[in-house]
Image (tube, rainbow, N blue to C red):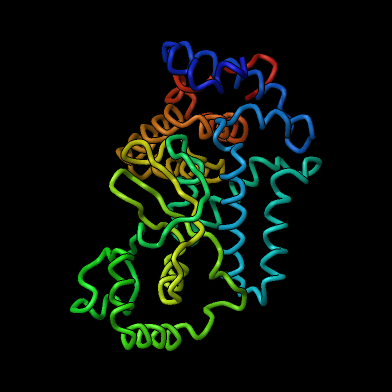
Length: 321
């Protein structure tokens, strides 16, 4: 059963209602066996979520990017502390089976940290319709859409987004402008923005169908341009479709939504009905959301059973969830 639900080829060949029914039965079995905090249940979690969240590249991206954001938030004192933070994040993934649900907690922690910084990265990193790789990219293939010095000088650089190849030509042809741009950066952030170094860390770019867009690392890319580098290390995502789908949705995010909906019941009937419709849609279309609701939240919101009856597995007679 596990091989069927995680096989993308079979998923396309099977009628949707069959695949849905197979996953419901599998989720029901897993939830009947799941006891949070045990090594056995940690293994169960590695079977139930969609296959892309087990991708080593995505895991490495999450550790690198979230570790860097935590280091910024707490003002890490040096690169040693940055490495220590990243080790701690990595340990959440596979080293705490006897205490927590490490796989669930790892991705939920990543979601929380990156949303603090208002980044779309949690969705992009874990989406089923984004393919990720890491490679060295020529700067001239990229573009950027934010940097104060460039915005203040449209007569020199034109309107954004700015192609890096155009910036390289301007700085090559006009050394005085390059010198002025470097001094502007020092005036704004100093010789180094943080106490730890990040200029040679990978940036993250995504192709949504019309060229590469930078989603993390704008400052690092600009630093590379000012220092006349030719290439930069990149996590490269290729989005198939208009928007990311099938991405990680934590039980905490779903619980927040459920509590909001509950609060609407006595004060906003229209909002309550709309909220239930949205919750139904999310669980129907996102396997991770459905699994996390079933495993962690279903018992907390019995009043939603009727509205969600056709997306939730039938309740096991041997277990409340």
